Each structure stands twice: as C-alpha cells, then as structure tokens.
Image (cartoon, rainbow, N blue to C red; front, top):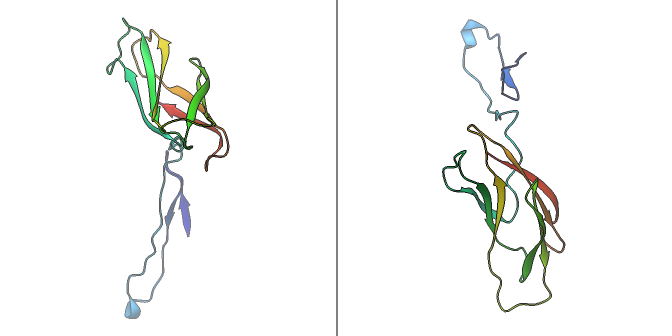
Length: 138
C-alpha cells in the first residue's frame, strides 16, 4: 500500500494488488476524500450571511449582515461588536412571539480585492448547541 500526498487534499490511498493471472478480478473499496482547509462548519442558528451593498466597492461603506433564528422560544442579541464581528444570542424570560433576528455590522471602506471576515458567535444555554463558535465569510 502506498500513501500519496496531493496539495489541498487530506489523503489519497492507492491500493495495488498482485493477483495471479488465472484468478484475475477487480476488487475495490470506497472512501471519502476531503479538502484539508475546508473551513469551519456553518455557524449554528445563522441562516444567511451577506454584504450590503451586495457588490461592495472601495468607494462606499460595506456592512456584513447576519440573519438567523433564536434557539429559544424568546431571544435577543446581546454583546455585539463590529470588529471583530461578534454577537451573543441569549434567551428572554418571555415575549409575545419568537421572531428571526437580523444584525448589521458596518466594517468600513474596503480596498479592492478579496476579504475574509471572522465571525464570533456565542450561544447562551439552554440552547441545544450552546457555546462559542467561530466562522469565516469571504
């Protein structure tokens, strides 16, 4: 068995079998190959991330917009900051209706090119997925 390392891939296995000619047949196995830097998993309770304007330019302020749902019957966004983009979801004792949330994070004028924004999310208990999470938006 040989192990071959290709750039950007976790691992590729090449199996070479020596089978006598009289009994030649094919045998195989399946496996999954994943990219090494596939990035963090999606942020829980965040349904959409986008920029305003939709096509940012270096001449106007760009904002990152996050939209999602609360993991509680009633919730609120607390402790938010623009740089780095951070927010915390927390339960409220009571409210009339659970509503989706939307937060806008102005990040300023950006030079031309690709940009990556780190997003930090804290989800307070008793949510199913509570804790600190980090994601990237490009």
